[in-house]
Length: 215
Image (cartoon, rainbow, N blue to C red):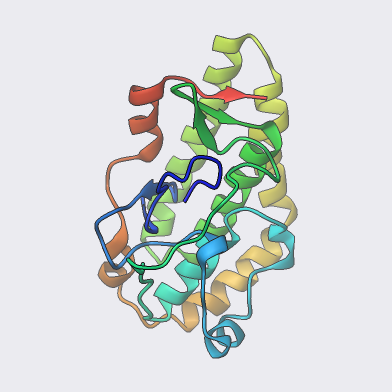
């Protein structure tokens, strides 16, 4: 629930092919749940090994849920429990304000970076080899388009270029983790992507709210 308004935000989230979360109110089995509402058995946490330290914050809940799904465990949303969440209080943004998406450079940069990390580690072959190059191409195109429309190069400099730089910086660790994770995968490709939607979330939000406000 939104702590400010009391409005129900979601009951977990489905995921799109690029690991953007889609609000869920219907499905019991979901792609992920918000970290504030995430309960995980210690045995599974130990088995997964937590999340990599270099994630820092944002999308670590998504990573944990993807790892659990790869292990063959469902991610379940409970209907009769709730949590009051101060959306965007720590890093700013992450919500709709006055019928427009609102976010911050830092939140957007960390989110895009960590989604790339999670995708590189968790997506099984051959889906990773197909989706990841498309994802990076669209990400850079998004940065160029936003910079041109807003006439502000900060979008590229503070969000999108750092994502590529961080992927390169941590490439050896990411590759090592990917090998380890994929070697212990129990779920089939079909099972892993069961809680995914084929429609890209950003496209839906662009149509509904227009370009995001980034501060």
